[in-house]
Image (cartoon, rainbow, N blue to C red; front, top):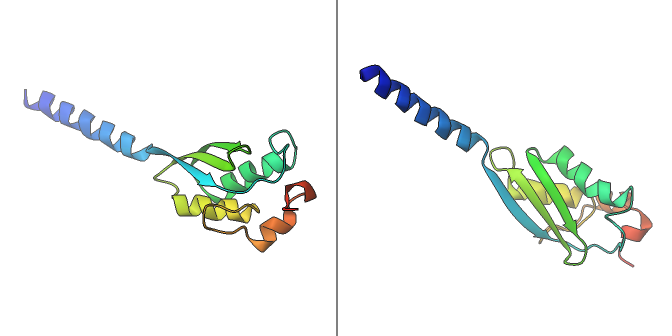
Length: 116
């Protein structure tokens, strides 16, 4: 009986450890998207996704919504934070909530993605 209780306790501990390691969260970030074709464009649409995944670890899914001027990110909270995600979006040339796009990131955007 003692061994059974030990095994059950270990199973619960192992399950808890796995659950903490894969803590998935979602954040929606306000931005300004000036391009009306970002999701279809080879450079515009890929820019946010690739830069975000390159600079912020644990990114699971990125959804850009030009109509609402939002970027929704599903991420592993044990590997990244909302601040890191906002900084990565700013580095890709887009504002992220109150963080302004970096000069370097904005300069790399195609002309259609820049404010007119």
